[in-house]
Image 1: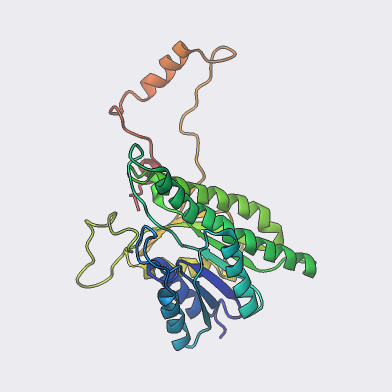
Image 2: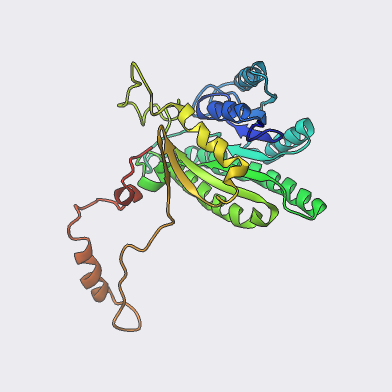
Length: 312
């Protein structure tokens, strides 16, 4: 019996540790040849010396288990660096079939204290990094489709976060980047569908160095299943990368141990129509102020309130 991803090749960014590592190992277990990309800097804020060590270790682990893997150390937030990454996958395995964007950094600060560099650096790695690799992968699939005169096989799995859904007071840069990734994903899904490519995004809840503050109050169980283990997110990524998920496109899914939630697009919560051609201040005051009268001052609207989700 063949494996679901047998004969396919994949790139996983930020795959030297945590969630990316678990995803790379899962794709390899399902039969894919994997390019393990990681810049290798030790700090979760992107600080420290670049190192090939993390990517090499994961690639070696895949090869030791009988799989195919190539380690790649490069900055996916650099446009040309991302192009080199996609080019390396094509040169090594003949083509690229799967792109999993996972790389990211954190530079948390309240919006009134955040510096321009703290904003720019997080947007650069998360949002621009997702765009960069997507751009070159999409160009590859489009060109292959034109040459073949038919659809090809392509899968993109992007990494968003519930920080953009439910809010995250100390992460305006991160929340904005993760919201942008959803917009990028849905746009990409529409643009590439005719070429046989799907693009979906996940909001994972996983215990990694990126989320150690978020889950500080949720210790790892001494025995039994850890619902926040990155390994519980990886199977969904493997599934979305597979032929079985051909009809899933432009979707956002929240995932952690034993749970997958398929998110809806935003819906209208309430609607008000003016009795005149346009609203006046007084009419808006008469309609909207009572609508929010039962809310404490300063309380925000969050998707989590409607969907029963917790921040992750």
